[in-house]
Structures are given as C-alpha cells and as structure tokens.
Length: 348
Image (tube, rainbow, N blue to C red; front, side, top):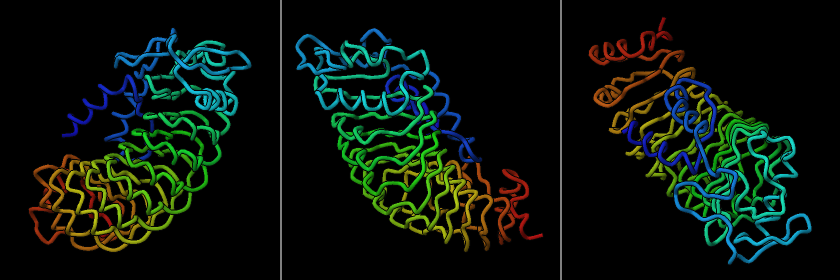
C-alpha cells in the first residue's frame, strides 16, 4: 500500500510538491518520499503556461486587476492579485531563488512562476524551497479559490495566519521546513476539503487543537519536529480516512489514545521522541493496514504481545528507548528481535 501511495503522490508532484523535513525514524520511512517529490515539482514553466494537468493560465477573456498601478488582463480577481503581491512583499520577494523571477511584473499573475489558475482564479500556489523569508501575510486568506498551498522548505517565520482557515476549497497545505512559531490555529479545522496537512519541521508550540478532528477528508497529518505539548487528542480516532499520522519529535505527554485503533486505513503511525507514558494499547494490534510503527524514545512500559498481530503487514517497528517493554509470547519477542534488536532495552 505504501508503494501505491508513493505513486499517487509522485504523479501529483507536478502540481503539489509535498514539502516537509525529516526528524526521526518515522520520517526516514515517509520523509524520503515526500522530500523527493519536492525537488521535482513543476507548477509553471515561467512563460504563463500551466502544468500538464490542462489548467489554463490567464486569458484575454479575464476580468483583469491592477498590479503596481498597471491594469492587466487575468482571470484572477483584484483580491487574489493583492494577496499574491502581499506574499511577494512580506516574504522578501526580491531575494527569492532566481529560478522564480517573473513576479511583480505588469503581466498576467496567472503566468507567474509557481502560480496556476483555472477559470475561477488562482487554484495553486507552490513556492517551496525558494528562499522565502519574513512572514506569511494575512492576505493569503483572500485566495478563496486555492486548492494547493505549498510554502515548504523556506525560512518563513512568525505565526500561521488564522485566515488560512478561510480557504474552504483547500485540499493540500504544506508549510513544513520553515521557522514558524506560535500555536497551530484552531481555524485549520474549518478546512473541510483538506486531504494533506504538513506543518513539520517548524517551531510550533502549544497543544494540538481538537478542531483538527473536523478534517473528515484528511489522509495525511504531519506535525513532527516541533515543540508541541499536551496530549495526543483522542478525537484523532474520528479521522477514519487517515493513512499517515506523524507527530514524532515533540514534547507530547500522557498516554496513547486507544481511539487510534479506529483508524483502519492507517499505514504510518509516528509517535516517537515524545514524553508519552503508560502502556501501549493492545488495540493497536488490530490496525491491519499498518506498515510503520514508531513509539521509540518515550516512557512506555508493559506487555506488548498484542502487537504480534501486526506481523503480517508491518515493515518497520521501533520501540527502543522506553521503560520496560516485554512480550509474554516468545514468538512475538523473537519477531521483534528480528526487526529491531534492543526493543526491550529498558528492562535491563
């Protein structure tokens, strides 16, 4: 199943990018796929032509807007044009990677590098790995036709604007690999069409808002590599389409919610390098689609025999550097030894 998801993501890379950064074993499994896509993403060729998905750039039948005092013909609205210019100014546009050098010109903004429009307006904005600095402007919330927003792998700082929660059509949001701080806005829970959310590799703090559980269509959540505290929300168990849940390398505490066993499509579960305590829920052994399980570097203890039910599907499991974990069934213990020797090191 992992190879199938990689194929889908790779096909979509020409529009999306994927963004993100790697911080732990879970990321070693999924992060290499995500990072590899970013380097090959192509949204626009810089001449106003859209990518191979057939979306049109600006055309002579557009409504037009004013850029730097010059009226241009485009399908983008004035609010969208203003939002793009706000990003350019706020994120130090003149010093962006010189591969993307046609912003802030009196031509159709739908032809600017990494901007894609359809007949409704700006559909995708994918300015990743481009030396952006400064902050994400609140005006980004005026791109109300946006389906893809990828600003990953830059040097953006400041808070995530709550206005992003206004982008009701958004399907893919990648802000990973920046220096963003503050809390995760609860308003992101308003993004009912969101499928992938990557906030990994930042300096985000505070708790994970329970409102994230409103993302009924999401199948990938990546919050790893931040400074998040509090517990793992039990309401994550409501996200029945979830395939990747990666919250490793934070400061999360408390127990692992048994509700995660409701995520029957889950393929990757990364909870490593936190401050989790208690036992590993036996219910996790019922996750028949699980291929990667990362619970390392916590303070977990107890019998984990029930995880032996994963032996037919699991490809990687890391339980190392916890308190005493044991398996009453010697067959399960031998299976774990074969995958990751030292999983029970806390018992010595």
